[in-house]
Structures are given as structure tokens and as C-alpha cells.
Image 1 (cartoon, rainbow, N blue to C red):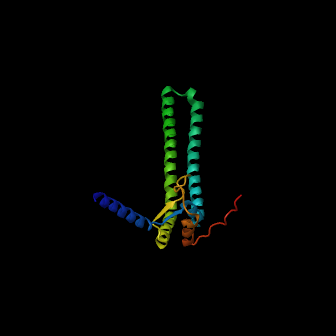
Image 2 (cartoon, helix red, strand yellow):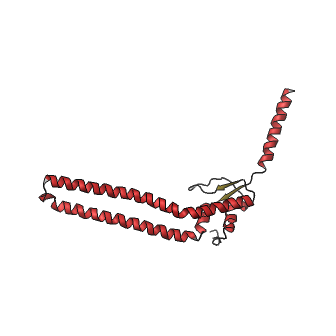
Image 3 (spheres, rainbow, N blue to C red):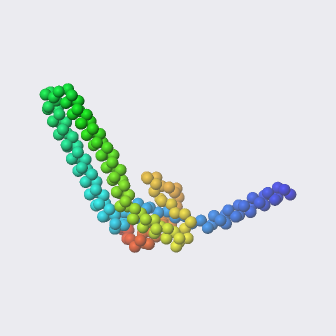
Length: 180
């Protein structure tokens, strides 16, 4: 008798789980692809290239100044007193450390600028993803790419959420390339 009750409870639990699982609708999308279609991306690419060039020019100017000072020191080192040489070497080391610090700060600044430029586009895409998911009764949406490896191992090709988001944003994907 007791085993029947336990088996009945297990069966009810399993049926409840199956019924609940039927409400799950999973979609997948490629956020990077959608963002690449956004018209704003051309301007972002141009802006970040300009910013990168500015940082590169500043670094190049600092490096060239450092090289000039090193050459000047090397030419005058023989005629300098030991104290003057020591002082100039400390100045050169400080200048080299300043350049290294600038390189690190420039990388951080570049990343911050890139994120600042991308944030409005990302927000627009994620809002569209949320809207399309709600409109189409999806319970879960996954990115189909995580770095270089797909997140999902299997999905139906006819259920591509990316196309719905592109349509929601009013974008037109480029024509499909024929398989070779």
C-alpha cells in the first residue's frame, strides 16, 4: 500500500513536470550579427577609429620625445658629471614609466569609450529582444555564440529568433550567400 502511494506521488510529480515543460519556448539569437546591421555601427566604428588614432598619436609623440632625450643623453653622457648622469637617468626612467602608464591608461580609456559608444545600440537591441520574446511567448532566449563556441548544441533552424529581432528593429539583413 505504501509503495503505491509513493509511486503515485512520483507519477504525479513527473506529469506535473511534463506539463510545465510544455510551456517552455526557447529561442536563439546572434547579438553581434544584429548589432552589425544597425546603421549606428558605421558611425561608432568611425568614432572609435578616430579615438584610437588620437591615442596612438599621443603615444607616438611621447615615445619620440623619449627617444630624442635618450639620444641626447647618450651623446652628452661622456661630458657629464656622475651626478648629472645619475639625475638624467632618473629623469629618463621616470619618463619611460610615464609612457608605460599612458599606454595602460590609453587601453582603459579606449575600452571605456567603446563601451560608452556601444551602450545605446546594445540597449536598443536588448529591448527589441525582450519585446520580441514577450510578443512571441518565448520563455528563454540564448545567444547562439559565446566567444567562438555555440552555447546551444541543438536548435531548430526554422525557429531563428535573430530574424524576428532584425524585423522588429526595421533592419534588412544582407542577402544570403549561396553555399559553396
